[in-house]
Image (cartoon, rainbow, N blue to C red; front, side, top):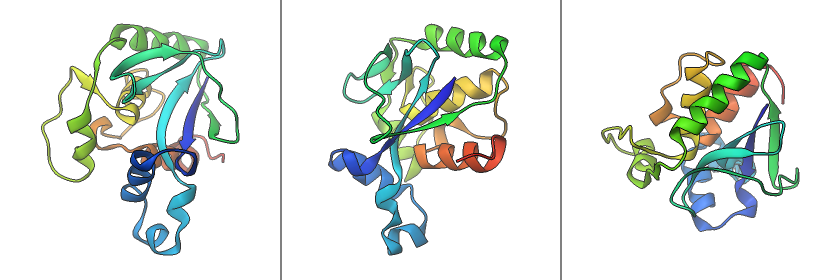
Length: 158
């Protein structure tokens, strides 16, 4: 299983805005924010991806091109049982609405709506639910924050 991160430089204005807003001050000044991430998905071994999509306005499974030119792939160390639990979590939460207001939670305090999700929120929640990661608050986790946590925290890979 992997978590894959969409490289904002290949996205639209909204992708670039998310990447810029969730990057560190130093990365904003140096321009490194352009190499950061604006979206994330769980990628299962069968090629199915799961996340919340602002374009489809819901959480969903989908198969699409995960070319490493536009996606950063990060292997997640977990057991087969954990993978099954993650998939079960995703199935239970498939078809929920996209949380546009939740994305603003990076900027201002907004009450978390458990019936709606944005991408890094649901990916983080799935990994927390299955005890693959610990200590993150899903509604406050950006794609950049999740990438940093996974690569520098639990997996020590890049």
